[in-house]
Structures are given as C-alpha cells and as structure tokens.
Length: 117
Length: 117
DNA sequence: CAGCATCCTAGCTGATACTG
DNA sequence: CAGTATCAGCTAGGATGCTG
Image 1 (tube, rainbow over the protein chains, first blue to last red):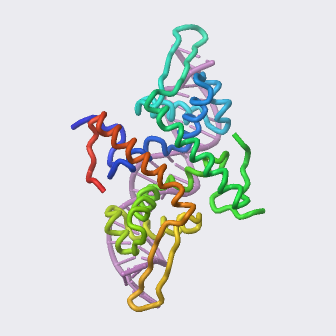
Image 2: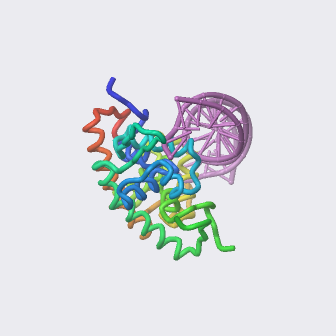
Image 3: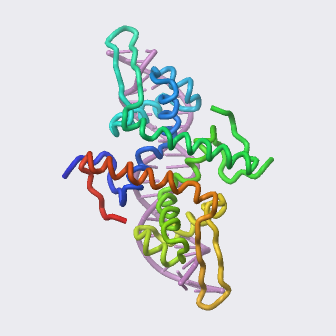
C-alpha cells in the first residue's frame, strides 16, 4: 500500500479538505504567505489563540503534507523558521478568496468577531 | 446581540471555514452545483457514504448559512428539493479548484481512494 | 526558544430503529 | 420519501506542566 498520511478519503475534494481543513491551517498558511518566513514564536503571536501543542501539531501536519517547509538552525537558543512551499503557495489565492467571501458574509449578516486577526 | 449561527470566529477566514468545512459540505455543494437541483434521496445516493442523520443535519446548516435553498412540495409522498443559492454559487470555483488541486496531489503522492465520487 | 508528555473533554460523527 | 430519535464512540482540540 502506498503512503497514506490521512486515511479514508472518498474523493479528491475530501482529500483537499482534510489538508487545509484544520482549525488553524488556513490562517497559518495565510500568515506565512504574507510574511514569507516566520519563526515558531512569531506564529504563536500571530495566531494568538493557538496553544503550543496545537501549533506544533498543525505545523507538523502541514509539513508532512508538503504545504510548508521547516528549517531548523542548530544553535542555542533554538531557532526554527517556517515558510510556505510551492504547493502551499498554490492555495493562497483561494485562501484570500475565502477571506474576502467571509468578510462579505460577515458584513451582510452583522456577525461579530471576537477579535480581528 | 446580532444573529450568531456559529460562535467564536476569530477572523473572516475562520468564519468561512466553519461554513464549508464540515465533512460533507463541500461535496454536497459541488453536487448541487453540478446537478442544479437534487432531491433528498438523490443526494443520499450521490453522497453515498452519508447517513440520513448527517445529511439532514448538514443540509440544515447549509440552509441556515444561506448557501442552499430548500423547497418543500406539499404532497404525498413527500418531495423536497435542494439547490445551491447565489452565495453558495460564489464558492463553486473555489471548490472546483480544490478538487483539481487534490487530484494533482493524489496523483503525485500515489494515494489511494476508497471510491471515486 | 521551541517544543513534548499527559490527561481530559466537547462535540462531531456513526449505527440503528422508528415515523408522518 | 424524507426525515427523527436515541444511544454511543472517536478524535480533534484544550489545559497544564516539563525539557533540551
């Protein structure tokens, strides 16, 4: 059997959603695409409501799926940089589309946000 | 306070993902956009792995969020038709892009599907 | 600084049976 | 035909504390 990171997709749409559908994946990809490169701590501040555990977990999944690159600097104190991959970059226009679509819906429906990010 | 269908979005991207991020939402929207109009039973066959409970629940959410329209015919036996709304239609290009993107990734990674839908 | 290890819970999802 | 109702499991996600 070939490599299966997540199992049980039923179609390519299923597959795609499992890749970017996590609670923070979209936001992380978007921030990385905006900033170019971000360190772990910077991501933690940017995605302000994420816990270290979830950040690590989400970054690992994105890395495994080939959507981001992780670069470790062997120094003390530790330094790790994240940046979006080419494959991940392909998703950016659509993430932006979704953001704009969301903004429009929020405007129309009068929905309140906890905080803008 | 204004109407809040789902609570606790942190940004518009968050908001958007909660609207289309359900396990079957993307597929349902896509099938509706392809077919134009589908009855409950037709959707059940098309989204072959969904249970009646999940189908109803998902359709209600999509309806509440204004992504689809539900039309009940007052007759026996019952007949209910679903079709995508204008707002939902705006998401179709995005969904199609995701499908194609997913297909490409599956091709590259040699990932197996349970069944094509 | 950039994480891992544990424990824990909510809610999403599923299986099955029943109904107007 | 188009759903409800009920029960139950799983896992995504959260809280907290510790470490190289």
